[in-house]
Length: 209
Image (cartoon, rainbow, N blue to C red):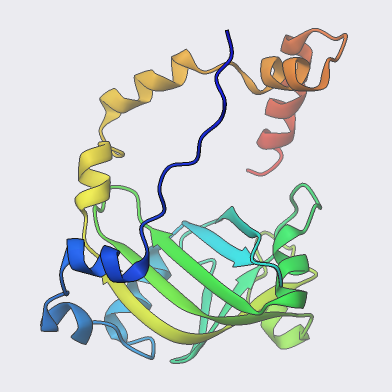
């Protein structure tokens, strides 16, 4: 038996604000328009961020970015540079930024409950001086994202506390998820041993270190 799909009721912004109330003055005051010494230190120790963009029609995308701690460079108090390391080459973020240069970043540091949010505008660059600062193990990226900072603020740790993200016991959940090879075979209808795909993927991962 199938059921007709129904859309939940939309709650509009005036209702949202009425239900949530107004933020405290101190919360608003912590939103800076530049990278201060505290956010600079956080970025310098962060090995991972989530990068959010959207195209001209508002279709959104969020992708993970990671490398050695401090892989994102602070060029000055209002400018960041993010190296574009080899990935799947779909380049959704670059495509979105060509239509809509708004960007949102969420920096994490393993073990810390608080996160750092950075919002602004971004564009790709191949400026040699910028790329040279991102050289690791004799290799430098062919492109980087330059982020012109508009908002910087620390986000409280409630979400990470609730999710128990850094709790080792939470890693047991990974055993309940199919392997990447099993997922690919199921989604693409491949006639191949999933274990072979998993071994190839692990070999490609080992090349990163």
